[in-house]
Image (tube, rainbow, N blue to C red; front, side, top):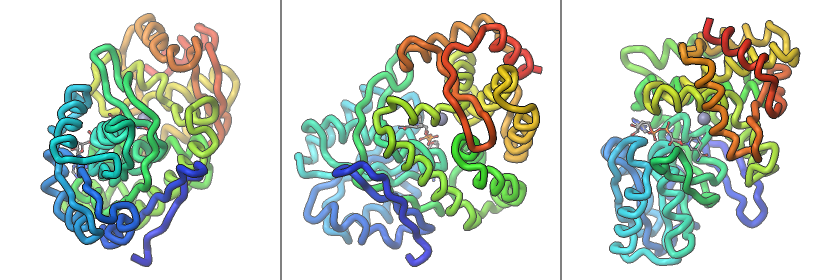
Length: 370
Ligand SMILES: NC(=O)c1ccc[n+]([C@@H]2O[C@H](COP(=O)([O-])OP(=O)(O)OC[C@H]3O[C@@H](n4cnc5c(N)ncnc54)[C@H](O)[C@@H]3O)[C@@H](O)[C@H]2O)c1
Ligand SMILES: [Zn+2]
């Protein structure tokens, strides 16, 4: 397709391209160099398989592969070791070997499981991401983080395993429930906030029309969505290329997530969509930045207006402040013993702040709950 574009993730020998277009037309040619004569496992779920399983299988056959379809149940509750083990057994039963390829077709849950099994099957085989949710297109399919949940917490088991390519067909968003679309859009707004003031301004201009198009009785996905996705992928690619293993810069992708994770943890995962918790988290983070004198009140208002234009919630749930403070401790494990916040300085510019004063945190929380 001539309208498709490519973003590359520069990771030396593990570099790969993100193909971004409006159809599966280029899929056979994109996959051909990767699959020649190989067995493939297409990992998807019961919702996505009937929608997009056939064109992807046909593309694999056209590219010269022998695809085996492995369909997992739908839902975050299935992102477990038990599911991973079942999928791994199915891969072995299908006689996949070290030269085989895994194709992840679905949202972030499928992508995380498929990437994980690809990362550990026979000590690691190659895989390709075909994301079908907005969140997976702009976030989870790029960067090589894979994982499954334990009873003790989310994403506690996983490996870094980069895909060989990411193929985005954003017309698949046509069938995505609107609430999932807008939850993913919270991450899109996040990219504007952390790295790209032009993207943010563009979202301010485009969001009202987008909301009308996507919430219409017969939703359509305007072309602008494709170019917004491409822009987000380029930002994520840049961040990941600079810091693949999250030793530094990559932490900025967690903007809104320290507060957001606390919300998800305390309200029970699934009460709010992840993006809805992140939207609230970004609002709280901006208020905290303001409280610490890092940014003006006008930034808080501007971000709030965009989140609300996208129909996203901003108010922090009425949780006990002590509980919220305790929930922050959970994020400590991943950031060397500190509670780390990503805070805005300006639209498109953030900084990391470790262990901000408790009084400022409490004041920001009060304001976020007002
Ligand atoms: N690896 C990473 O870097 C990373 C980053 C962010 C999030 N994640 C993970 O991603 C997961 C969330 O991903 P998600 O938001 O995509 O959720 P999801 O995978 O559960 O998908 C949301 C829902 O949409 C359905 N769906 C998917 N594509 C569809 C389509 N085109 N049409 C209709 N329905 C469709 C799914 O079956 C599901 O019911 C979480 O487990 C999170 O931990 C991982
Ligand atoms: Zn997120």
